[in-house]
Picture 1: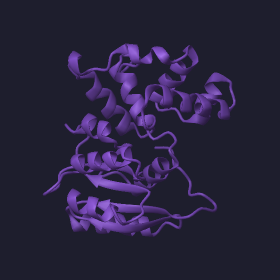
Picture 2: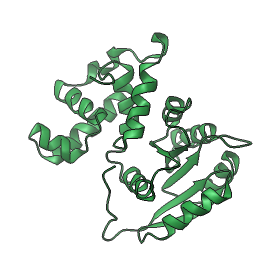
Picture 3: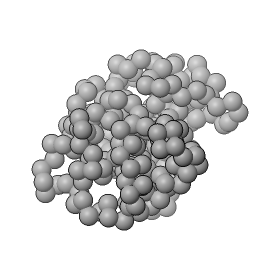
Picture 4: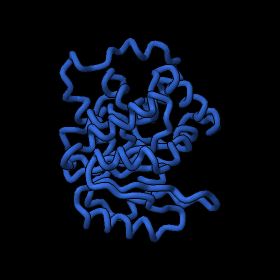
Length: 234
């Protein structure tokens, strides 16, 4: 993963850790607490506890385990998405998973997750994922997230796929930008490849999200795979 450096001057990124294993939370908290641009503002042992906490704690990013008692990470992520739909401000969610191919991948992304992180990933990958998701740019860049989306979307039965017609609202250039986003390119890389200014790319991305009625780049990439605009290995 390409490292995302800490900003020179900004408020610390507020992180909440949700995992039923206290030792896992303690390890993550130790790494995150060592960074000048991050701070852990809360911990929870299951999804229900996390939702209660996040109703009163301002957070920017949540590291969310999938398999937990009482309420799993998928349901908790969906609960946060419902709050967002109601006009509330909710943090970005990074799903923590032990397995490189988790059966909940596509469901979690549809529920509102902004990325995936393997629990055994190096600390620098975790820190980069938090910064990247918080910045809202290139959240699909981690190879594990891109590979998971591509694999699971490719296995979807035809009736569960999104009809290609949803892409009709996009211009040819916007389709081109969407393909590059799905391939994991950042705005800077897209600008270089298309020989345009980065500000132009940001404008295209904004229009793509609006036209497709999706929350972020991750949701847009899911649509790119579901509609067949992008296929694994092509």
